[in-house]
Image 1 (tube, helix red, strand yellow):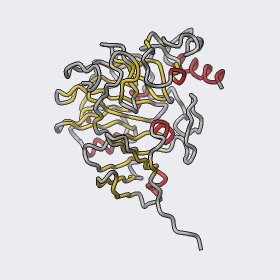
Image 2: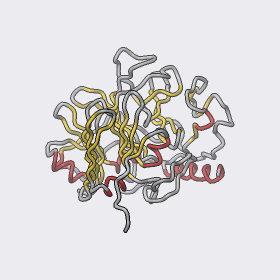
Image 3: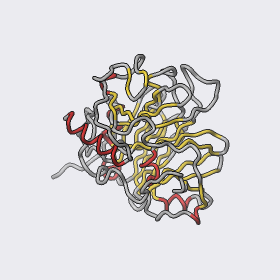
Image 4: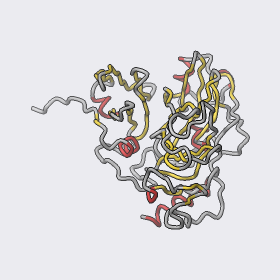
Length: 327
């Protein structure tokens, strides 16, 4: 298992143009240092923090993104994007770009945001870059980069101001000076570019003119989103295909609930119920191949692969559609 993981990580490093990585650096090499990050106060198991292949900044985050109008965008209608709206301003971030960069430090309507995407977990999450909680910076935004490390197969981000490691799906600082802090999660969607553009014709969309030489027309993880294979070890819940698209709802109390695509479709593609005393609606739009979610603002909404949601929320309840009994 370890040998296969090292070969996979080395292959990913090669795709991202990182030469000479052998997989020798890992928790066994130095239990308190990894990729140059201090893990001495980590609040997650150090042995489960794994190098993903590329080193720190080997996957280059974008910090000066360029945008174009919808009419000038080079994307096809079926290309998937992460869409976010704030104070009437709409932005779209194509997965074709995010799969190569994973993080975009941006501002929308003067709000500093971080658009994050972990290809291994299928999780696209947008944060406010101003941290709260332990080690807060009085509302000053952070700039984030890709650490090259993974926890539960998920992206560990780092901020350049303090070298703190942050878990993407958890939205929390897990090692470093700001451990215990958290980032506010903003509502975002994953859907086809054509659907997003039709709903937001004045949207701006991230340009492939990033300053980096990347093959934005292809993925460095071919077939991964359909395969049952996980590149890195996770104690995966096997009730569904590990890569099944899933909506997860989470309350500040920690209460959580999962809505696998299979169950939503079995319910007629529309689920309306109470979660934590709040009315929520989860729908699957088969034509757009996208979820539609209605929930109060205090409910965190995250879309990811099934295995990833359950890895971070093992106690999560799971919506199950009622099925007629066979005669």
